[in-house]
Amino acid sequence: PLRVRLKRDAEKVRRKLERDYALGTFDPWTDDPLEYDRVHVQPETLRAAAELFYDSRSHLATRTQQEYRKIVSRFVAFAGPETRIQSVESRDVHLWLDSTRAGPVTRHNYARHLKVFFRWAKSEGITATVATDEVKLRRLPRKFPRYLNREEVDRIAAKAQDMGYPWLSDL
Image 1 (spheres, helix red, strand yellow):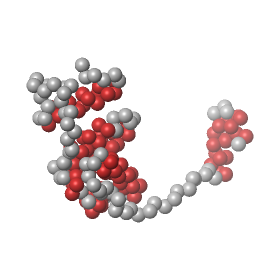
Image 2 (cartoon, rainbow, N blue to C red):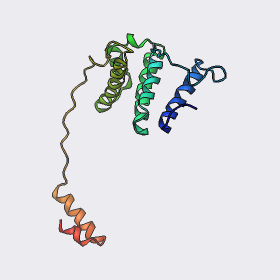
Image 3 (cartoon, rainbow, N blue to C red):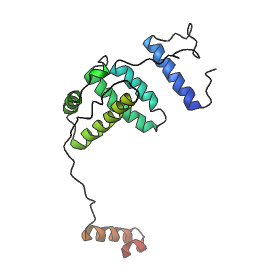
Image 4 (cartoon, rainbow, N blue to C red):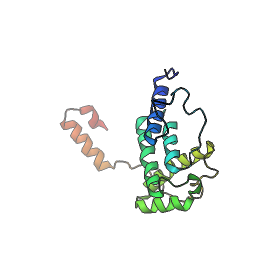
């Protein structure tokens, strides 16, 4: 009855209807799910925009969806769920990153996820600016691969010989 062919699309519609029911904007006893929400409503708050963002990422792997939800929801909780998305600025993102007390690599990861969220919001016409455009993080040093030294290779070869893998001891 939802007029979709794919299970993924049906789950997306179900999630939207459940979310709207929880928010009180959809009543399954009086509203027709097929006609419901034909008019596109622009979200005003961070919470509403984040929910639409999560729905837009439903095609991604489960772990990726969890990461987006974890990081974006932490920022939304910090900035305030009822904060207007148009009023979020780069200093808000900086304040949140500073409040996390995370290391440099984690800060870059958080900023990258928020950048995807705010760029999505701009592409959807929800906001005119990308709040992460002015976020400047300290450049990470390049990490070079670590190689085994000769002593480590000899220990591994000896252990391989002891375990019955003589072909590995020829390394």
